[in-house]
Length: 239
Image (cartoon, rainbow, N blue to C red):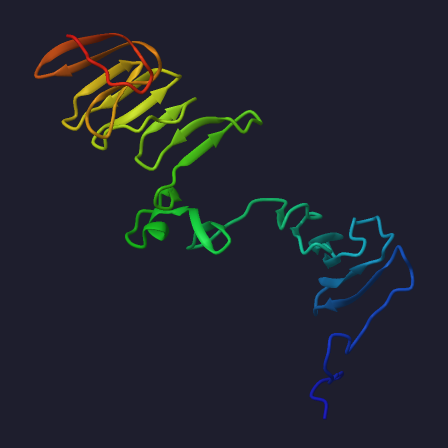
């Protein structure tokens, strides 16, 4: 027996079907509150053009005269806009007490959120970018797929270049094809040309050519240079 003014029982998808015979019209339902506010859900006809919802599911705000949500035939969802991607939003998006996760399949690769959420503890709410083990961050600018800046998984930064495989205790900024600025394991600064310190602590030529570097150590300013050598070969520096 019915428990409301209209009660429909059945199974399957088409228990109730609402069809608009006009190709430019809408098939839908309108919900009205006790005030003048009303919302409609429905599907646009195949030739509908007023709101760009032809053959799309929609949520319509009757007072504002605007489509609030649209789902197209590819399953794309638009909030305030006809979607062009899986989620297409016109306006700002707020994510509360959570992060935005990036995955390949079911494998998470990175996330954006506040530090307390991504680290799992504390009350530091600073905006944070997170990359999974072994991954770094790339920055692409000016409409190009070329990596203008790379922060690798060791925490070393490359400007216009991928950072060389530096010794683990060094913290480095590689810039251009041959130059680097770094802090050594004891905190001593270094500025080098055409060289880097590899995982075994040896100086290596970045490219074929001469190499040199400057450092401050034991209260001294020290300059070193090396004859022309082959890319990837060991460098013998002379003070």
